[in-house]
Length: 460
Image (cartoon, rainbow, N blue to C red; front, side, top):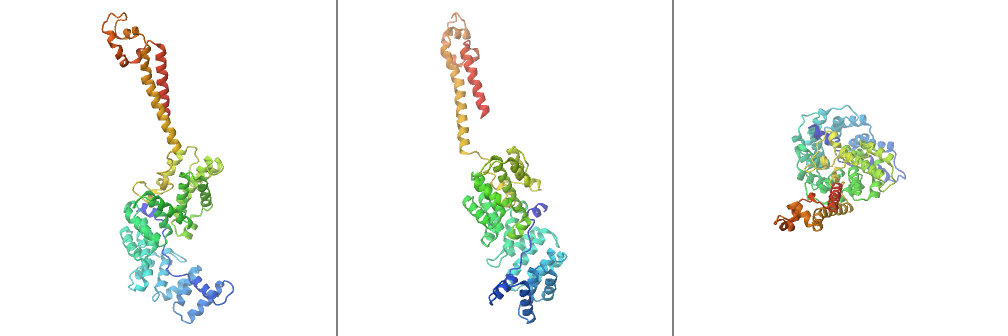
């Protein structure tokens, strides 16, 4: 299971499905005539007053406010006080224990609370139940606090993902990733769940969906739909999708676009910060950065869409573990095996987003193909080689017409013509190996044409 855990490393707990208490209270105070944004202490005072007056949910909102402000000890005290009657408080308490947020990690206690929520029969808590099931699936996949079981993780995620409005979006994305793994490979299911998650707003799945459309994995290949997914995900901050667009621009010789986008991506190297901001897996953020560095370095090395700068190119090659080599073929071989160095096996034809799009391989089947000019040049060279070989072959034999009959007689028989049958072979003389020529000029012409023919074939 180590390969699978590495691929899905970074999946986090589902956040509680409620509006930010801090923002909600801020809006309430602002609507009551406040000329400026309320201060944090004003929001806290407002929530305390409501809690003291026993307003419904007021105590939870105060605890949630402390949680958002990272005042975890105060949040924990309130949540423990009300967790028996408030499922939301129990949920956040479970997350704090499982992930060690503000307190020491206690996986078993976190799972205990999550199981209690997941088994709740209250239909009004369907969103919370779905989130709890997602988190339990995550625990079973990772084997923290429970015995590791991919089958149980799959079962819980399917339960969590079902439902148009109350299904867990993270569970939908997790299933798309899960079915992309070599151990659980089912491309049609992976595509289905990524498509559902994308429709519900998952940024991670939108990049994955683009990759699957591009490669025709789990669905019919659709380059237009792939680029649409990449562009939309890129605009929303998906670094992996941005890296795929850089690769696309480069392969389509849109070098200026590739350079502009790559430069923007490579300015920010904090993958974890981007992961927190976009809710995307750090593993694929790094891959998007690696693609951008690679193609930007290629542009710098060859002066494509920017000024040629070999020193800067080497900097970007090495920035993402790329070798500063002048041998492009070696760079590409290294680049497309980068995931193998990280412990991932590859199968370009059978595995989608999580596997085949490692590094720059999402567009690898387009990368390095000859241009139209290269194809025409190659065709001309082949045609010329065939023409020269034909000339060497048939042109040399045509020299027989210039060879005196006595030469033919010397080859076939009596030079004085005593052999009466010798002259009958004159018209068959083209079948004789031309190395027997006594005509030096014909022989030299044959050798020259043959040599030129061989040179052209070797050149091709």
